[in-house]
Length: 430
Image 1 (cartoon, rainbow, N blue to C red):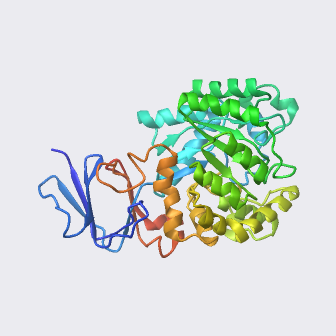
Image 2: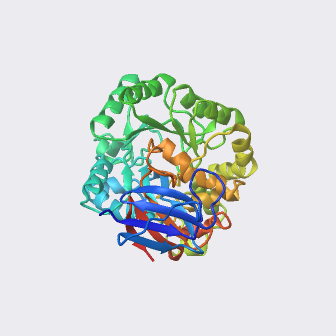
Image 3: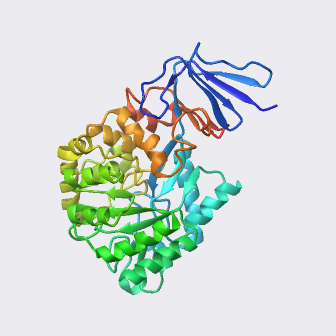
């Protein structure tokens, strides 16, 4: 006889963007939700196989979805990004990534997408090990290398090292449409779920943040391959020129999008291109540039951001404070909760600081939560199964002591995440 769990009494935020349901009932049979609604309107099963869980005073949410981490990275690591390829091998990169995936899972993120970690496509091996049950972890989607031009963002080692092979870093150097096309095919041959492309510089890359590196022809060549494989394309892009190039190339997700305007976002909305603004990363770089890093983070990691990154970081965050929410509201672009965890002070396990940054910039908590529920599931291609608490979907569920609609930072407090369930199986209780 299949086991049934009934969660009743809590406030349900179902992930669809609708009003919360007070005194809710959620019924889980096996791995799926079979009934959802308000108490008195839902038939509650009875029998020896039924377990009733009182969720009074708690918030009931779907398993959250983190759309952009870097499992190869630790925030403000004591060494430069480039030392990893020199001092570690890809197997060590893989094993170090395991707790970095488990940390967000224990905080309610039951699905995690890597934003591109490279190093011999270890993400694919890690994803498959989780699927087999060899190791515990969230659902994991693999992206692989950043396709980038010579000297582009994602190349964190000098040329005398990088020229020896693609397994030495997160970036894969490709020049010319034929190389971009071949590299895209190589990504999918090695089993990635997505393609990651790089169009612009970054806050942590020397030089003008908005310089657009590849040609449109190069970018289109890779995107065409992805479309032929039925895969989605991330594009790391900032500045109007770079983002417009990415839009014209028909990418699916714009990462960062620093210093864009309403015209860019409106076109993204029209073409159903998602925006991962990585606001916490931008804010935290601003903290570094203005000597405002919270003491609790400095105790964990020193501030090692080079001074040449300060100007871009200040410019980007000040633009976000002034323009981000206005752009989102006026354009209707869908905003994802891709935290870029592994980058500056965006700590694995505290991924929800991205939601905090969204709210800090003007979004309501309800708007922000769509970025790790409904919109995230859409962008990951799993909205038929996950992203909301609805009948027929997989029973990923989170119980929170507190209400994120009142205080979004509650999702960063470990002791407030009382239960995490995946497909009907409880994996965390506190």
